[in-house]
Length: 392
Length: 180
Image (tube, rainbow over all chains, first blue to last red; front, side):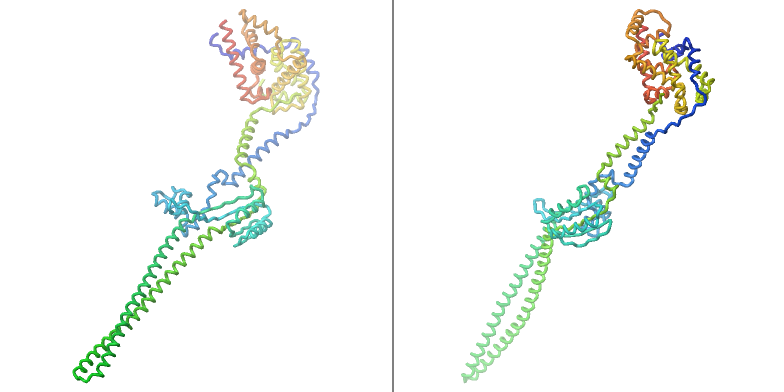
């Protein structure tokens, strides 16, 4: 009995328990009497609940698949999209993003594919500045995307808001489904303008991105160039002054020499006139001739020196003028940079949003998917649960 | 009786053919009465409910959908429901009166020699009413897991699990009582 097979014993028990009632015949007879021939089968209404439930589950699953299919970015990291490659790429000049990655990868010993976009961009935009210099010259670009069902009306309102805040409209494109406004606005008016724009639509319909870049590197570069240019200008001015001073000094010496020669000649001429001694007269004549020769040489040198002086002075003035132009150019660059930090450029994009898009905004799609999976699992389990027997 | 035979007989019974009903009676009643007697422990009451079950089944036969369930399983479901209604009317939850349970427990304790069937009957009454019911449906009514699941309104897996657990508990009881 130890090694009993319980199922066999229970099967035997079950068979032994089957029996007919004592008055089986009477009971059977009574039962058979109740049988009525030619039953009219009654129409049994179809169960609608099951069909509806299955339809609901199928519809939910189809909706989920549709959501995934129409939103390829659903499971990607949203923060990744906050980086606008376009704007940075445009800042970097002619370099495309792939070139950017290759060059960066070559610099650090990795392939372009191994270099993340963020690293590449940050490397490109981060200026090589002195770490202790904490000045900020922020160049800000502002982008707003507004989802709306009334694109025309809201774009008109956006234009009014921009103009009301002293913005300059650079371009405006409007259509039934899409509008784009490019503008430039003083830095001080940005916050007010943003708040007014946000009031146009509910919060979820408004997406803004602001990109700021410190132009300290550019500022330092301009400052260094200005210093060098000013030093060069000073050097040129000193050189010009040297030319002028040298001219003044030399010209006076030569003039003095000519004057002295003239005085000597006049004195010798007077002495020659008053003298009667032939030998002396002859001697004076020789002296006068030498003085004439000296004066002629001095005059010639004087003229030559003056000509050279004019050339040197003109050259110095031209160099100073050129250097001044360089300084003016640098000043213009500096002014432009400072204006850049004070003026914010941006775009506002308005796009038409459908009902599906509104649903996407308000409903957590991952949550819906999880619920759909739960419903699906429950549906599968429910299918395995046997339907209840309809008892009379 | 094979499933096909039962289906064809049920079809004929639906059309009011008495020989088919008679054949079904002969095939199903032993199990059905055995189930009722084992459940109610009262022959006259079991006969009453047997009669009531058949009458209800025959009157509702036009509504019976053959493709959904075997006729016999439907009949057992009706019988089970009738038992429950009877207990409800009499404010009783269990088929076994307390005095009978104590009496059987005493007999077990004193180790009176019985046949295996009586031994098992007395032993199984120590199980819960749910365990007893499911074992009756499985071994007296000879229903499949699917049919039991439909009668108890649970999944097939749940029905399997419940039967397995009831058998395990019965095995434990048998092992314990055989060591006395």
